[in-house]
Image 1 (tube, rainbow, N blue to C red):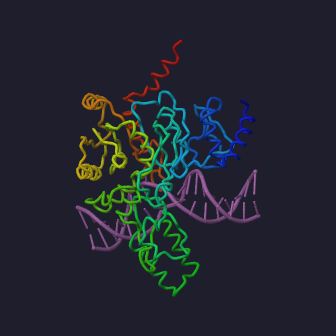
Image 2: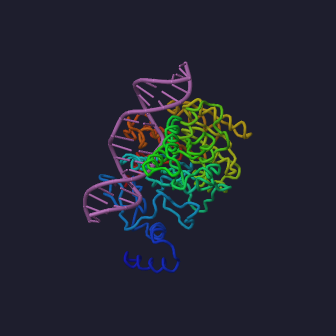
Length: 420
DNA sequence: ATTATCATGAGAGATCTT
DNA sequence: AAGATCTCTCATGATAAT
């Protein structure tokens, strides 16, 4: 079918089904036109709806499409599940094992292109956790999981601030229009700041002046503050962060506040990840062996557990001793039947160690992790130096270890395909 | 020895204006 | 269409306070 004819047919279909043009284009390119428009949909390192210059000197073809779907909804979110969609995975990306990789969506240019190329040319799925909870969290996910028949964790978390934090509602001024929170970070606003804000508001009797409102709103947005009393704002507490991120209450109890905020700010949003992992439930009714790299406070483990997927053997690689203790405590408190193997430094994990695990546990069913974002994150003024940065370069250890399993190495692939 | 506070912008997208 | 303006970001390191 010619391209114009295809678009025309599409227009009819859209008007008949009242589905947004963007979604329909998206689906059609996946299901029908993937041969002529390859690869479809997402342009790497481009999380906007606007068109931009395509990346230069990239080895895989870029296809400009006239209109893109809302790119921060990936292959669908519960409110807009495009469950009929299937995607074409590069054959060398097909498992076992299943793999799942996560990092911040807004990186320096070219980072997601590199990540995707190393991970077998699988296209990133960019998702904002605002579709799952009351807090923004824009992240990219590269994985080889099926995307049909996903389902969300229950109960669904509240999607508004007042729903998630009911006690704030009575204190929330009418002139603060926020209905959702910004991204949960690793640092919080100071008590001094909340005091300054209170003083500014107290100095006005009744309605604050426009200048004061502007100042307060600016600080509230910058530091993600909530209303906890008359003229009084406060940063989120750890347990509130835990709830927003989908963790059990007091999940990170027992470590000092600084570490607690840092670990939470670095964590997965559990509902989002669980939505993506939900397709594994029917495939592994008797449980999974999981290799969890950069485990942190165990977002992946909690997601699988909350999905009701039994954890058989979990190898958890995490450099922070306090984060390891959080996961270990959770493992014990939830009476896990499986075995938890803890490893500190991922750089100490060599081929022999991997081989030993394989002979002991058999195959890993899932390799999951989000590598450090320190050198990618926008908030970093000091060392936002990309994927080669001090911490973020640990991505290549994720790739190195993942590549020791079923997936075919690129060099090997080149040799194979160059044979006559 | 810990903990709290503060200063340190760029970069890119989103939205508005012309 | 193009430019101006607004908005937000899984942060780091020095210094003050406890």
